[in-house]
Length: 121
Image (tube, one colour):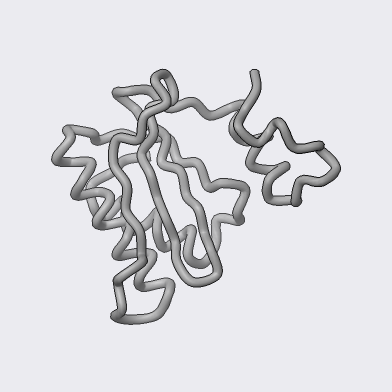
């Protein structure tokens, strides 16, 4: 099974990319239970619900444009927004893909926000 990042030589991959690739061999998103993928940049956090069987993004949310509060509070709000968008598409259960990041800080806040937005994982 090959992923988009597999073209890179393994030794040139960052530690996070290696961890993410290892996680992705075990996690698959389906239409009924999509994968909640997290990407964390220095300023913002991005989340997507992905159906891996088709390779389609079902819903997405970002902290870009959320100016209130700290970055952790913005990540939690991003999770709540994603939960609302998922509910409109009749999605209740997801598989959480932390993207090779530690379950800590903004990644944890996004997950908790998604749970407050009625997503279950």
